[in-house]
Structures are given as structure tokens and as C-alpha cells.
Length: 367
Image (cartoon, rainbow, N blue to C red; front, side, top):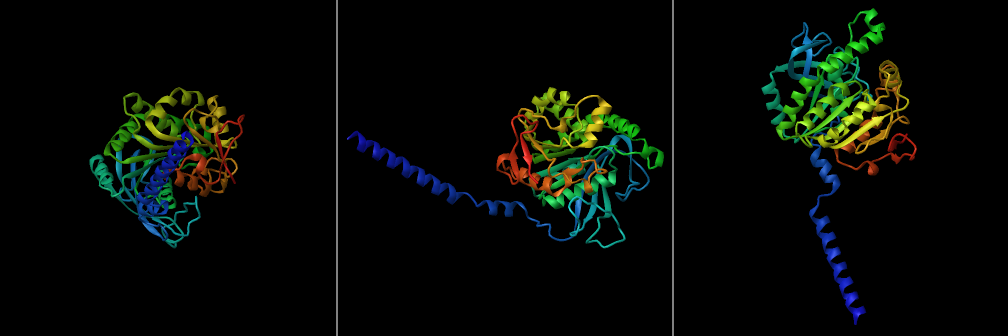
């Protein structure tokens, strides 16, 4: 009798499970349909895109374009806001941002103009976007304004990102003179100082844009972490919680010990943190020698952070001087970031494998 009761109970439970499973899949859209709905524009032909910019660089001579002469490499106390109109060629190689306004628009990036705004108009334009997502990109060391804008445009296009893309361009770079280009240590020190100066204005910008009710993803590269990470930690300390959706850190040139000190604030700020690292990053090795401390992007495990070693797929052809430091805009990394923005768990993403227990990272991006 008891056996019959157990059999009946088991059968009822199984029926409930089958009914629930049927209802779940009947009510839930297919994954493909969800992605198709999210990506309105297929980005499969040459396009002119709006790249929103916020820059603390001092304005130079050109006021209606985004050429190298438009903004310099010294901090202005009043940030500038606007939109760069960028032609993204359908035939560009992933990671390459070759600019030539006189050549074929299907093969070269081109600037098509600039729309200047103030901070209120800038925020209004972002808020009025049909998409509920915003991607903020912060570049690294020795990157001029025009390069930062082109890179943001490339990332938007290659990720097929449906929302607005904003580049925050701080005064990185150096004088165009040959002597200044040779004196790398001097340029690094100047950029490092400018990065620290930009923490307060970036924190204000981040507070403003995350207050619009959008899902904000923040993508950072290299020394840009000197601008971003303390600012994010400060906002978290002030009581702002989970104001970022995805915090994506690429080759962070940031003191490892300092990173660990603010880690709890960073995890409180974001739904998820992904850190791409490489022990073969010669730029970070050089930074370690200059600063006398290990850098966060050299592959160490951090609680609550998905640390992914990209050394196997790093291709410096379009990187920063072949230093193994510019991988963040390459096909392998963008493929993974695409899945990050879709919300896919790290262990379920393509080409990811678990790392060994004695290694610095949690995961490895396979070649």
C-alpha cells in the first residue's frame, strides 16, 4: 500500500514537472528570437554611426570635426560634449581603424562631422535612445582623441551593439614632436598624472549617465583604469549600488594591491566584472618596472571577478606597438564581450576553458 502511495506521489510530481517544463518553454521566446529582437541593425554594410563623446581635453583649433587637431592632451576644467559622425567601412579588418577621408568609404574609416552639445543636451539624447543599453568606453595610455572615437565606433559596429556608445576621452597622448615620441617614460608620467586628475570629472559623468535609468556597460583599457576604478569605487562608497551592468576590464594598468583594496566597492558597483589579462603583456611588464608594483592585468585571481587569460589568442598585429597590449578590440575578445553583453555565464561561453588551480586566472580564452 505504501509502495503504491509512493508511486502515485512520484507520478504526480513527474506530471507537475512536465507541465511546468512545457509552460516554461511555451511562454519563453527562443534565444534566437531574443537576440534578433535585441539587434535591430545587422551592421552588415558601411554605415555612418553616431559616437557620443565626453572629453576633458582642451579644445584646439578645429571646432566642427573630430580630427587629431580638435582636442589636445592637457585637461580642461570644463568637459566638452558632442557627437562625432564616423563612417565605419564594411570591409575593415577587425581591430584596424585606418583613417582616410579621401579613399573608398567601404575600406577606410572617415570623419563626417561633429555636433557639439552641452551636458544637459548630451544626457537628453542618451536618454531618448530607443535602446535601454549604453556602452561607455574609456581608452588607455597614449591615445589621441580621434583614435579613441574611431575605436569606440569600431567596437559598436563589430559588437552590433544596439544602444548608444559613449567614449570618455581623457588627455592621453603626447606632443607630436619626435623628441616627445621617443621619451616614452616622460609621456607615461604625464598620462598617469592626467588620468588621476580625471577621476573627479569622470565620477560626475558616470553618476549622471547611470542616473538615466539605462543599463550601462563600462569597457576600460590599460591606463584608463586609473581614471575609472577609483571613480567607480568612490560612487559605491557613497551608497550607489549595482549602478553598472557589465564592468569589463581590459589589461588594467593598475596597482594589484590597490585593486584588491577597492575590490569590494567594485563588486558592489556592478552586476558582473570581467577582467581580461595576459602574462605576455609587455606594456604591463614595463609599467611594473616603472611603478615598482605588479599590475592587475598580469593575471591574478580576485574574488567575485571572472579573470580570463587571453595570452593564447593575443595578436599584436593591430595592438599597441606589438606589445601584446591592444587585444581588447580584436576578434577573439569582441566575440567574448558579445556574449558577456548577452548575459551568458563565463563557463558557458564559446572557446572558454577552466584554468589550472595553480594559475593566476580562472579561465583561459582558447586559440
